[in-house]
Length: 112
Image 1: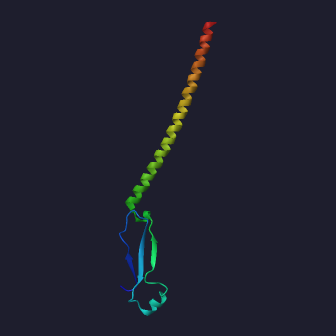
Image 2: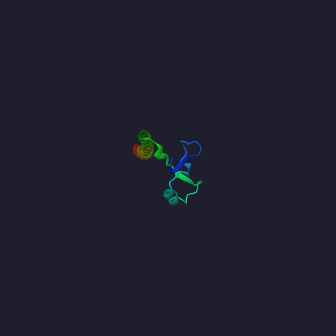
């Protein structure tokens, strides 16, 4: 193959976000291309950044989005339930206080 050869280092890990790739200049290049790429040394190592999101296929991306939305929905529901619980508890306390004051007034009225 004429041009720049790509040589993989090691096994590509599915959970890795980057991978080392060596690019070495192939000796079979025409002279004009060799002159333009003379700044490259044969042992040039180029780091390629691979985003884990980019490796997922369309279905996997949809599943990740659905799971994230479900987590967000659960968080909102927990916050709403805690708020509702707090409100109901305060209402019950207020009702109990109101009942106690009414019953206390009735008992004072009956004593008179």
